[in-house]
Image (tube, rainbow, N blue to C red; front, side, top):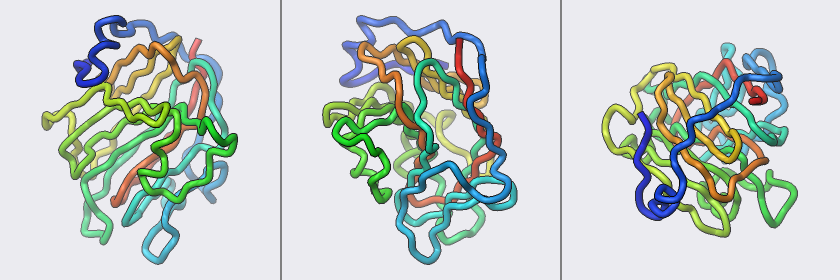
Length: 226
């Protein structure tokens, strides 16, 4: 189900209809089942006892008491499809919290060619250019799409109803597409966000993002779209 645009994005919605063309899968650019040692990623989080970002039991585990971003190390460009499976674990762990199933994509720092200079605090990313989706944010009360740029974090869309929030210990299949100036997110095949950008972000990095939670990720692929 497509979201209605709200707030500052209303003007964009009036000028630009929802995107309907998403291409077809082309070349496989990356695939990871998170077996063995974690490599090819940059993890930004508070490194202290009890915080973990590592491969464990065939999944990427993010178990933190504060903010964390795990960036895919290679930049993406053009039309791409990012897919993976993700779970928010709530099973008595000290960091278990049903919240912040979050994502950055097409992220770049307009003032620094090196994106990877932060420590995981959410506000440290405010000056980037990127798309941000926060599913089940604010302790599982909001699901939002934002576009960051020029120091602003523009709210493009928002869901507050229970069917767009999180369930614990459930594997969700996520697909994020960037295609010809448009971006969208599917969760378990349902469209959550659909946005035609008048100033599209056509290159940058993808990152798994969360705050104070325990989450695991598997079956990560990136395809070119054509």
